[in-house]
Amino acid sequence: MSERQPAPKRSRGNPSMGDVVRSVVVLSIIVLGIWVFGLLQTDTPEDPIGDSVPYAATAESARDVATYGLLAPANLPDDWRVNGVRFAPTGTQAWHLGVLTDEDRYIGLEQEKESVDDLVQTHAEGAEEAGTLDIDGVVWQRFDGPGKSVTLVQETPEVTTLVTTSTAPLEDVEDFVRRLTTS
Image 1 (tube, rainbow, N blue to C red):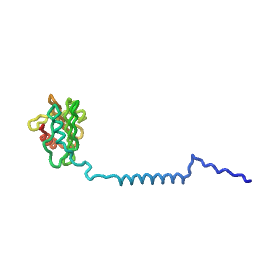
Image 2: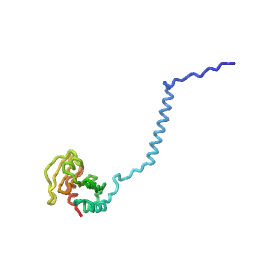
Image 3: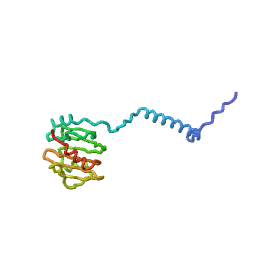
Image 4: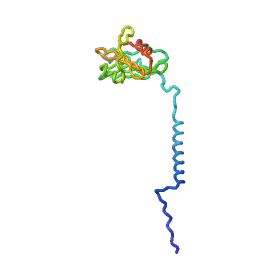
């Protein structure tokens, strides 16, 4: 009888260069397949910002609950669009309205039962007092922030109103403020 020779043991700690290359090729094919599948399943819209969010109904509902004169624009230029709207009826009764101008520059409206300092710190971090601004007989505190951002704030016993932008010019902010109404 012939004695069987055991197969030589391969070291599991030192793969051959061929093993490494095969492993890299297999993993690359798997990753490439996942990437191609993701491309086929992803629909990128032409306009990533999308249509304007309807805000009038939310503003009307919020006005029924708010204990202050809730502001919203009576109308906006046709090429401006609302990209966010929300109202929290409890606590500080926070009202938010975000708008993009025709050049996709952001203007945000915030109303809350908070102090000027708290609202500025929350929504316009780094902004510093820069005097006042009269818009059609209404005086707003002005804060200038990093990158030419402008924040306007008005405080009443009922609510603090803040209009801020990081990208829109002051003229657009003033136009937006002129459009605000409580009805």
